[in-house]
Length: 424
Image 1 (cartoon, one colour):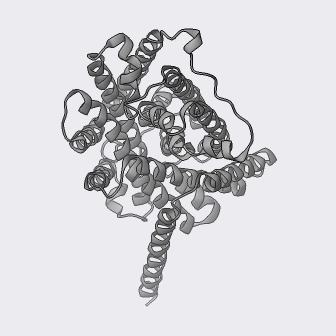
Image 2 (image 1 turned 120 degrees about the vertical axis):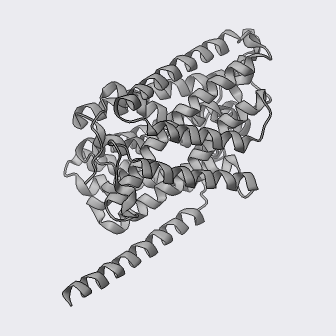
Image 3 (image 1 turned 90 degrees about the vertical axis):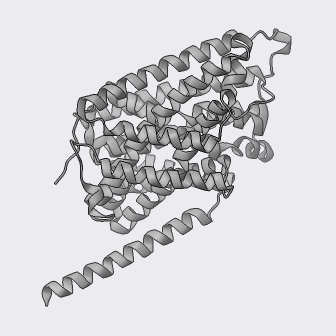
């Protein structure tokens, strides 16, 4: 049977997770959140970070104890059986089908600001480039990962420094600190952009699909997850605060251009667009890594066609190609006007939150430790509370669950027929 190579260490794993997580969340969501709720957005980011911490712990515990390229689907199977495995896998794929095109479109808007062109064509080119990079095998792929990840961190820090240097607001004109009390209307305002912002804190569940590829998963996986969360959260707060202090009134879909304008001027948009493209390429590269591992795992387990469960030089290239086809189709849906960027981000964030609850249920079932069970209950409560207050497009996950159920029943029926023929 084809196997994945165990190449990841603490450093390369941290870089991989940062590549998966940081992207559209940093480039576009601070602007969109500020546009939606104004100065209160900084509190929305804070709430999102706090809520995400116990969710991350669930994935760390599951990943280091049950390392497998199947990620949440694998944990669900171990805890509850094949039906929830398929349901989790389909919910995950339903999230990334919209999540990855939304990430690519984020960079496309930046590129369109310097060289006007059809944004969906830009997005398709980026998706093709990120998928093609996976055809580098072994050490070449690891080196490419390290170069991209390191470059992204440097570029982000430079842009943030430029943005903060441009803050020339007298203290009397500084935006006031957002106030907060626990009145329901204020809470609803704070939570209104939550599902959209939450997309910025997704990605570690994608990274869990790489747990099987760590040389020392029980040690390195935990540290890589923790370090990437700390670094990403610092970067998120830095840009969210910068947008708040800058009080931008336009360009909400490309806030980096607005916050660096005082220093870089109109020509600064070229540097920002190039940096954003590099960042999004890294993000897409890492995300396709994780999603292709799930697709490979489903093929290996016979849930999807067996041809998806093979590797070439330790790399699941067939799975990479299939993932690319589906995200390009979703990009076409946005082009046709059937869906838009905010909706894609919200749908992806919603599915991920449901998956976090499933992972917590799996941890509760699989672990005998009281602290793990208490953590599971906390995460389940958080997920249900957020889903209730933020409002969900419940039809989408229900449709996905129905498809997964039909798929599961048909597979069971085929299995029984095959068993009957063998007995005959």
